Image (cartoon, rainbow over all chains, first blue to last red; front, side, top):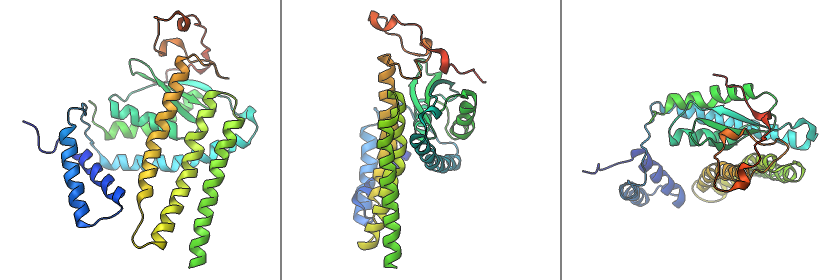
Amino acid sequence: MKPLLPHPILSLMLLGLWLLLVNSIAPGQILLGALLAWLIPLYTVRFWTAQVRIRRPLSLLRLAGTVLVDIVVANLAVARLIVGPMARIQPAFIRMPLRLQGNVGVSLLANIVTLTPGTLSASLSPDRSELIIHALQGHDPGAIIADIRTRYEQPLLDALEQR
Amino acid sequence: MDLLMESLIAVLILIGAAFTCLGSIGLVRLRDFYERLHTPTKATTLGVGSLLIASAIFFSWTMPGISLHEVLVAVFLFITAPVSAHLMAKAALHLRERGETGLPPETTLQRHDGSGRLSEDKDGNQDGNAADSG
């Protein structure tokens, strides 16, 4: 017996996506969007293997805010590095042991790491226990790891249910 | 009012253009592949971001209704930019592309024992080996 609405979050996202695409909130478009948001998850249910449960949406929202601010900071910091002397750039690869498990959590963290100051997620170890990060200023790997831990990984750990 | 909106939009477009330009300068000035990956993901997210905000303001202001298409562009950009950077970095690691940094320790990379070429250099630079701070 298939549940009627297998992925409520996906459905909500699809409805939002549709309304943004057509750029209108006319009742007809909402109806059409709702129909699509109901049918598409129903027919692609086998593709979505891992079900994610969001335990604390507020914590996720706060994380989104932090990330947006950090993106602006990242841009300014990288911009300053680019126009400044190249000697200030001391790149390094950093191995960061992951506490997060699960596809969604790890990919979210990797994306955030890439978007934020001077770091780039370069690879994931085959057993998914470590994220390999390339840092533009990697002279203090411990500080970078601690920063990522407290700012991004902890909120993700709090917000997502581990699967 | 006109002047205010126009100058706001102009400033946003200029900021966007400046950051896109900085991204390109970064591509020229940075020294190796991995460093160059940093600029398109960062300097352009803010660059394109401000251009999109300018666009949203302009079209919401001149056309009837509110224009929110731009949100979608931003969302797709924020999803695709890190993913493509990650894939390029990963591909470079698999090809054992050595930058200024050397390579991360071997054990963390997937081994390709089938082809002898990849397993021959084991002297990956240990610079990036972070202490396991628990």
